[in-house]
Amino acid sequence: NHIDETTMMEIRNATNKAWVLGNDHFRNEIESLLNRQTHPSPKGGDRRSEKFQNKLL
Image 1 (cartoon, rainbow, N blue to C red):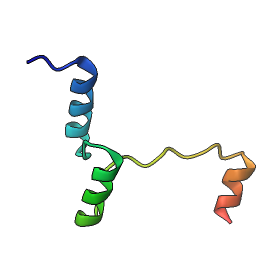
Image 2: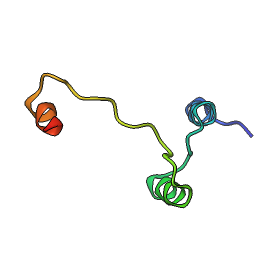
Image 3: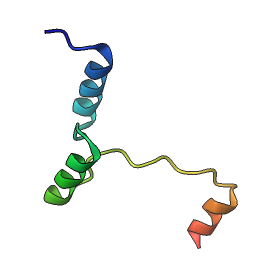
Image 4: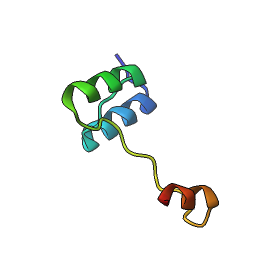
């Protein structure tokens, strides 16, 4: 069977970065069971924005 390129890239990225592959519910379950982050954190915000500055307080 042939796996499409998008799915193959998702598998490669998850494998190379040791992230869990699956939907949000599954990843959250694994995260709570292992007490380990299962996906990348969001990137930092615009440090000049008011919203970002308020988070620092």
